[in-house]
Amino acid sequence: MNKLHMIAKGVAPVLAALLMTACAAPEFKQPAMDVPVAFKESQLPATVKVAADGSTWKQAQAAEAQPRGEWWLAFNDTALNELIAEATRANANLAVAAARVKQARAIAGIAEADRIPQVGVNVGAQRQRQSDVALGLPAGTPVAPGNVFSANLTASYEVDLFGRVSSNVSAARNDAASVEATYRSVLLSVQADVAQTYFRLRATDAELETLNRTVQTREENVKVNQRRFDLGDIGEFDLSRAKTELATSRAEAIGLQRQRVTTEHALAVLLGKPAASYTAGASPLLDTSLLPVIPAGLPSSLLERRPDIAAAQRAMEASNARIGVAKAAMFPALALNANAGGASGNTVADVFKWSSRSWVLGALMSMPLIDGGRNKANINRSEAALEESVGTYRQSVLVAFAEVEDNLAGLRILAGQTAQIEDAVVSARRSADLAQKLYTAGRSSYLDLLDAQRNLASVERSAVQLRGNRAVTTVALIRALGGGWDGANAPQKVAQR
Image 1: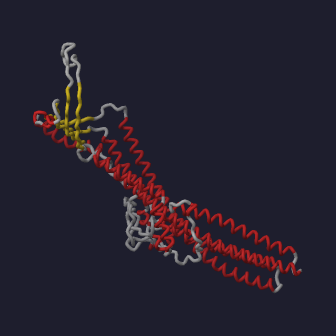
Image 2: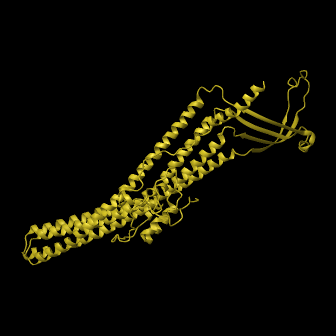
Image 3: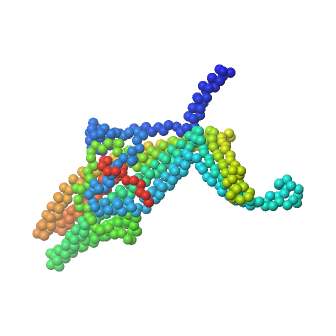
């Protein structure tokens, strides 16, 4: 017997450990991903594509809370600063995301409440009359009605034997963290959308300014050709061509006005305003020299603070914790209960007399025996949900790298295009001036002048469009990097709405 006792004594801890291991949430393991140290398009040789601090992409580091600062200040544009501040206060999508954060935090608080005993009080009064038969009296025996007054203090507590409560709390906390990261993703998107829409509007204004100059040139051509036609120097063909070009340029300007109005309305929605009550003043984008320069050699560790990646990371951890909740349902649950108080059939004051006291203490352990495979299926569902969240996380990382590479490449290519188009603008202006002089001197045809002016208008519009594309792509890169490339300022907190 002593030997059996010793064996049982040694086996018991092992069995307990096995039970705890079986039902506890599995240890979270960060999905392995083959990611580069730096971005291919960061324009530095491979041997130096590491940040000065040696930072690289680090597994299992949800760094969304790292500082990124008010990145739009780098554009040195007061109007842009005001628009982003206004959108941050009033954007409807941002208000929805903030409300979801409140809900997630409340749900986490509900889960946390299971960690402490639940205490309540019951106070009641009733008047009742029982039948004589129910009291065991002869039929027809008079039974008077009576009063019952009671007051009870109740307490209950679930002992977290197999980690159900702690796993549920962990899942709720990670859900809340995921929703908060999603809020910051919406915030970043709103701010970036405002900046991009603002620069598109300014680029459209600059393009309209260019078109208006073209219209003025066409109007002058019509006047000159009309005078020459009246004098008999030219035929009707040149005059008709001049009028055609004027009407075409005016039509293009009108069409561009439609694009501007649509962009203005989009900006109004981002600012949380009715489109009918918002008007943006003309502000042509004439220079891109003030655009922030993205430094070369950006480390890929910057992507760790992208809010969408942080949200996917937290969702994985929440799914992992729910596996523990599902496993705990297969094992015993221990609930402790207590009830103490008093009851009296006379007066309310008698309820609190010592002779009226009553109490009960209890412990209830329950576990499923036959559930038709429900709990096993729930475990399988939880494990599949984890696999889904892992896939979502991997996709978020891959998309993030692609977006950064796309925009780095876009800025590089746009810089090359801009350099060429600036040379083309200089040449086209010189060509248009020479064509005007030759035509005025009667040494070239109107078609030569028209061709030179068309070329100049086309090149100038292309230059304006490139300026707008560079500004929009710069914002897109900042968005792809998670809101900047340094840690100069503190991150923004979830707005309290």
